[in-house]
Amino acid sequence: MRQRTERLYPFLSRCLHIYAILATTYTLGNLCISVLPFRSLSRNSLLHPSPPRIALPSSMTTQQAEEFLWSNFSLSDDRSLIPWDPFLSRAFPRLMHPSRIIPYYYRASGNFENDDITVTTLISSDRFLVFRNLVRGYKGALVPATCSANPSSTSTLGPISVTIHVSLLSLDILVDLHTMYTSSPDFSTYVDVHLVLSPFQVSEGSRQFNAWRNLARLYARTDFVMMLDVDFVPCTDFRSFVKRNLKDHLLGLGVHDPDASQLMERFIQGNLALVVPAFEYARQEDGLNPDTFPRDKTVSYFVSVADHPYLTTHQELLSSVHADPPRVTPFHAAWARGHKSTNYTKYYSIPPGSGQVYRVVERDSAYEPYAIFSNKAVW
Image (cartoon, rainbow, N blue to C red):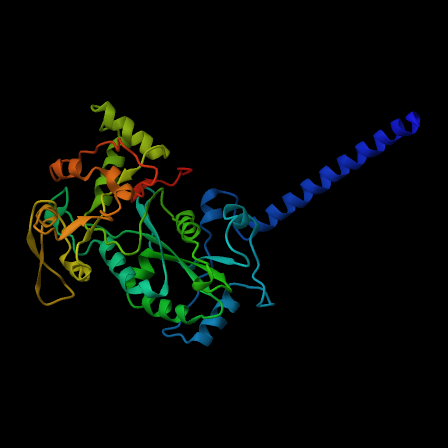
């Protein structure tokens, strides 16, 4: 009996080796298949493929949207099934299935600098109007030179990466999306749109906001990102401030301040984030017109808006915050745990344009800041 058992050991050992080789071959085969459509295995080409330019029709019906999807993005012949990329299945293991991600359904034609900041967000069909405000606000068209750290310059255009969930049971959202995207060169030049296709309606529990936010971040084409809710409008030119300090650091112009140099190095490596304080109007109806949002902490001014034949008044932030009753409040002030860690009192005390930053000391576990950080960060 013992001799028979000893004879089995070599046989079992060979079987285990064969199984290990087959399992490894199968896994590597899946990985190779998942990256074959891309030009190389570099991060840039893997995450930011360059799909063929598709001529967009000037208008689109629901039927045309469906035909556009199936003809240009090689979905499965069996429309009840949605193929799943092994690479993305590992990146988003908790995404509801069946699902199909289409990166760069619309790809912006602009060329973005690596040190730029991409706003990443997600939108639904009822948020297209506020998304227009976000695009327009991040474009910087309403920020006058008096608000910039450099009085001789104004804001430049900024890239945006957005994810949209589309239920295959209702493709009307693609018609509205197409109408919005082709309505202004701001969209086609600066906005990348990524789709998540599934047979689920949002009402069926398919609100996977974190996964959709991370998808927009994954496909951002710059080294730095700001994850932002679509309901917000950037009111100050923080992009120029960050980019200028990055450039000074890389050129060695900040070596006289070792603390600032260390902070910038940690920021570049993804070990530090810059929090942008968030505010909201006390009365919702006061926040419907982004043209009137505060653009400076302590200065009120008039600015001519090209799209309107009148001058728009911008109130200063602090006077709106300290008014009785307040017109503007810290975001979600009623839920202190969400944004109290920002320390708004400290923020109010810092002189505008000074470029000072301060550390978030008392960080609550429920803290939900809107922050700028390196896309290298693993959190």
